[in-house]
Image (cartoon, rainbow, N blue to C red; front, side, top):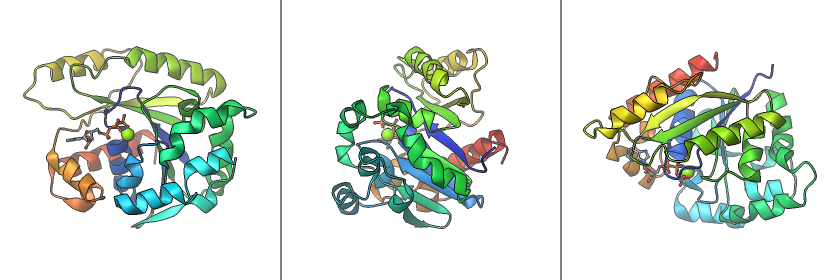
Length: 263
Ligand SMILES: Nc1ncnc2c1ncn2[C@@H]1O[C@H](COP(=O)(O)OP(=O)(O)OP(=O)(O)O)[C@@H](O)[C@H]1O
Ligand SMILES: [Mg+2]
């Protein structure tokens, strides 16, 4: 087994907490002494913006030092790695041009496996304990690439009335991907943006807990405006305000992920 575990955060439902969870679980893992590489797979660049200000992120989107260029040109990913400035935490940024990635993939041979191939050298080098990939809210060939490059999938689900809408499509897609990548495992579902005063929260939790053979993370993330403030300041929530509830919950979640990954 490779020393590096690749985990992707995916859900076709938009705004379910994928980017926030990817950023903060990665940061929590690095705090626990792990070497982590984050990969921004979304044209919205939210994972990149979690560490770099708007101007720097847009410059990265335009100067070719991003995942879009790497995938388009089928390049190996090492030259695209940047330091986030935090110990043990690196990032491959995205680009707004990612909006055209499906078109770029269309004519490629073995087009579902371009990202897996691009990551091969980094994974085999064992330089990182974890590679975490933030997926966009779609289910196409690009998200298939992200899942095929991963060992584990985490599905963040927003605790809202529409949070569960489309989850069946997500499971169907996961099963399709498993035909190409049979080793891909679903680590579990994590519930985010929980407001305990709303009664649909209990219903969401119960519905998810009742899905057979699917783990629901014990840790869930409550709504906390500190998350938005931290993102406004291009910082993980634990780096922005360690004492906040969201910082503590995300640190707990990172430890739960480490536990399930046997690290
Ligand atoms: N625990 C939280 N408390 C308050 N706001 C949150 C929390 N988690 C996420 N948010 C906010 O909810 C929005 C959606 O979160 P996020 O961007 O992580 O979701 P996403 O699934 O990556 O979205 P997309 O599908 O667009 O990529 C963001 O504006 C973020 O600031
Ligand atoms: Mg996102």
